[in-house]
Image 1 (cartoon, rainbow, N blue to C red):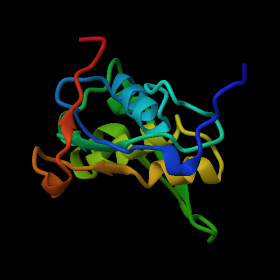
Image 2 (cartoon, helix red, strand yellow):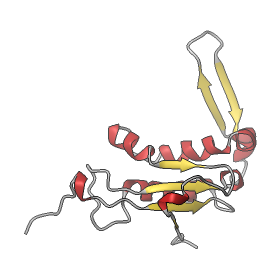
Image 3 (cartoon, one colour):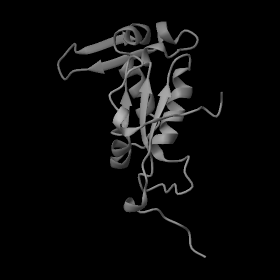
Length: 145
């Protein structure tokens, strides 16, 4: 008996919609990362991208628990002296909620070319509308709900 290893051509990709309304950021990111990696499928293979496409809607309605909106910071630095920028997640959630969700999900994916390939299948939108109706996405029902 041999161990099954999925090959690139064998993977069937589906489209799923995750609604972020009322969910905590970490729980939403875990669900999305599992779908993007393909860990919910019986053909999951660690070195092959077996994941599906994920559309996250209502990113502006995601919840942060505790004091994270005031204390957690998004830190960037340009190559210039004094180029450090700090923005709290509370401000970022009001201005660019898509980036908050994208960063949380990307942090749960592998840090290599395979992870980049998985990340490209993620689509995040601020409100309830998305332009992917032609792909006939299915609403993903959380196992935790």
